[in-house]
Amino acid sequence: MTARLLNGLVIILLATLAACAPGGQQTAEVLATSTNAPTQIPTEQPTQLPTATPTASPTDTPVPTATPTETPTPTPVPTSAATPTPKPTATPLPNSVLQIGLDFSPDGAVYASGGETILVYKDVRFLLLQATDGAVLADFELPGEVIAFEVALNKPLLAAAVANAEGGSDIELYDITSGSLLAAIPNASQAALAGLRFSGDETTLITTAPDRKVRLWNTADGSARGSFEAHKDTVTCMAIAPNGQTIVTGSYASDNSVNAWSTGGELVNTLMTTNPHCYLVAFSPDSAWLFYHNRENMSLYSTADWSRVWYEKFSGHQSPKIGLPERNAMTGFTPDGQLFLGNPKGTIVIMNSADLAPIETLELGSLASFSFAPDGQAMVVARSSRLIEILDLTLVP
Image 1 (cartoon, rainbow, N blue to C red):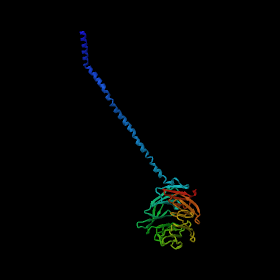
Image 2: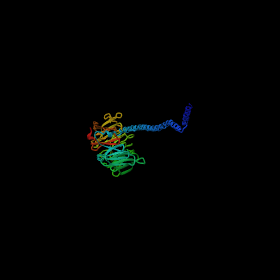
Image 3: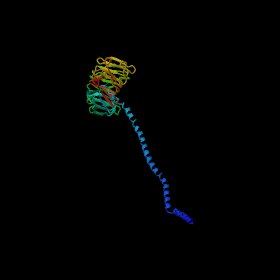
Image 4: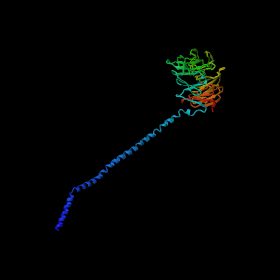
């Protein structure tokens, strides 16, 4: 028994010694390491979270770029709104055979040089165009304010009254094919010239001024050919017959007469003495008729005996027979001697001179001016939208 007890004590002693051996410490350290392993798992989550977060934020950045993309879309709206301005270009008249675009809005255009060219003007600028294809032949400017001007129909000649520093008018004659100055008449008037016209043969220039006088000048060199006093007040209208034999003038205020003169200044006839203001007088191409127009009435005279053929009084602002406003009226004779009356809206009525019976009505649309070709077969129209349009009158629908 004692032996068994000793054996049990030996077993207990061996177990105690085994517990204190170095191998037991290594086992404890392995367990401690495995216990701390979970603390390293969170360190990998932060590394993954930042990578995912920046990837998502750049994806949302392009969203604002989509907003500016729609901003340019409304921008073209003003462009389409401005398109209707040059509307005549898009809608030419049925008988339009040529359209000429300009870099300025013209005040007007007239046929020149026998109808072969067209002179377009704006303030001090003049542009000469070929009537067949619109080619620019000359482009020139005058040195000062243009008070009045006249274009010779059969010669490349322009006469202009230009304001000078003294408040008067100089007269300058230009070759329209080159824009070169041919002759100058300094101080032709102490005030602004009221008007100027070429004689039928275009060798003489006739001018009127506030000093009540009519003056005649040589177009070759600008030398004076004579003068005469026509009225007791300013001469407000003037015309010379194509045959060069008669000058008609009108005045207003203290002198309400309209008179016919010889080119030498002799009184031929007094057409009326109750003229309120002479707005326009014009001779027919054959010099047989004289048309008179003011802001209240218009008349036609036969130059054979200076008798009045008809008289038409305006009712309000319209002619009862023609139905066109008299203000800003564009009036004159066609190349074949018929009377026309038009307005800036582009309605032109061509009528029989003797009785005002309508022959034809042209609807040309809004315009700045128009001019018949010398042969009467065509017309040039100046639009305010930088456009010159040539119409073939033989193609009128």
